[in-house]
Length: 372
Image (cartoon, rainbow, N blue to C red):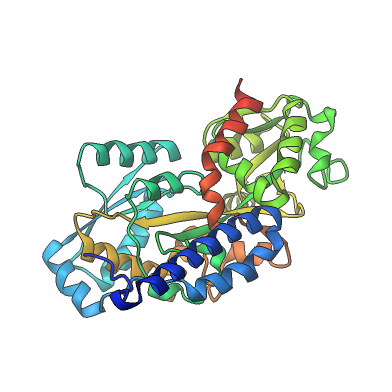
């Protein structure tokens, strides 16, 4: 199913080319503005989004007709549990029982990314919908693996939560927070801000995951590159201990293996607190957050089912279902949930979509400072 592109009148080719040129210049300006003046990005990108061409969305009836023939949807994801997926797809199939959903869960972000890239090089098309990460999505987009789409239910979403060209939208907004063990660290002793984490007294007692290049990108977007790199260079002196897996590290933190973890998903922390775990998260200024990109595969083997799911997931019903099942924060501001309640009144710093192009550079910064 091909995207419908705006047509250029041949008698006015000069004008059409000028419009394209102005669009490229505007996007370039937004990238620079997002990195230099993060707080001004929202207003600037809203103006650009209003002028951005969008691919036309097919009708529901047409998608249903095609999806009935395809009868299948292939979904690749990282970070959602099997139970969460089963509940979400169960709700989807209540409305569209003719679509059998098959999913594959990657063990880490890079595994899903590598699988998509390697299968594309081999000419294999097995995926319809896939999740990615903000630091990896640019490469998938550049490789032509993401489909440009109108995402008709996202018109009221913040521009920070969708690609301005329509190649992806955020499946959810993850608050990535600093957490400490309340049995080992008192509220009075606990760090209160980002600079407090640089105190040498925390040396060797802070954990996080080894694959944290997207965290670099989040700090970069919040503070600018120079300040972020200087901070990370100072942080590296505290001899961070690396572990794998958000859930495993959260459990280890609760058990007292470490005093602090720098990078845990807020919704998991809230769930763990409800079970009585001795953990608390820091209300830093800002609280870092990230949009987790969701894309439609350009060569999806079941294109109608893919668009049907994309429309359902971004609808109010789909967004509320996802929040009810996972507890996560979603882009639709009408949806209520525990994470939305927890961050109310907090300043969230979400990297704008255009910063995705700096994912490779962020990875290099991370490896040079922490893994060499």
